[in-house]
Length: 107
Image 1 (cartoon, rainbow, N blue to C red):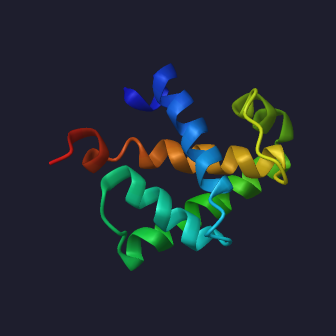
Image 2: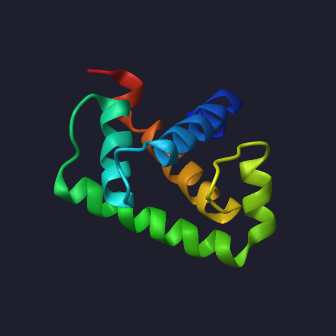
Image 3: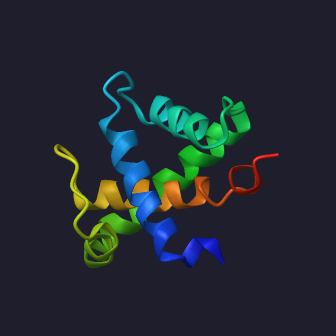
């Protein structure tokens, strides 16, 4: 249910922008680990990072071949130096992060 909630969509856009703007982390792996830590307050396992990298890569490929969908998802979210397709891939990945049970329940 949360995955399609508008407030979660806005939160995913903000998390994606924050992740892409993280100046200390210059590659996707480091950015994903940082975003994961922001969401669940612990570092990700190697498996978790690998799955997030796979999701980000697949999302990027999808949005590169469907740029209209990328533009719709991105909306007014702008991150200097990144294409709409890249931002959309990060939004899609961020939506998964904020819909993790560990994020929602904070056990």
